[in-house]
Length: 178
Image (cartoon, rainbow, N blue to C red):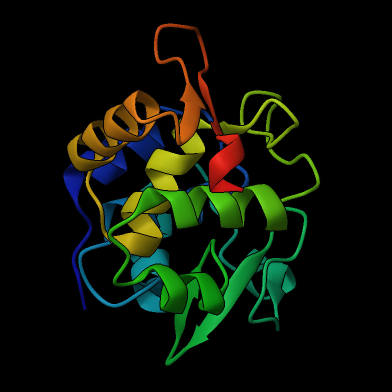
């Protein structure tokens, strides 16, 4: 089993409290270099190490039995005791992905209901950059710098609309990429 990472714990502890889904997401972001999702025992270790109370029993209440995206703050059982903030089909589809266009298209089409804060919601204005970075890291194993470089190339080629200079930038597929 992987050990609690100090950088992840620092990020978690920088909050007074977290929704359970966000707690799982932070752990998953820092442990994306192994099999998809995170182990239940690892979540329990982080819950014990956190400076605030984490109700690990909330896990089963938030699990959905679906291979596809389900609107709302849900968690997905990937099998073998592994839990993820993304559905199994996304891990399978994007596990070997090298092109962000497919990732943006799936987020645009499957995440149709707003969720998270207004800054995290997928809207007609596009996919939040922060959501794409996180999903690329967790589901596809693509680091932030590679995502940044690819977004710049896609934007230059007019395959996406993206303005990284604005606050809370969003990405939309270009007309030819739809």
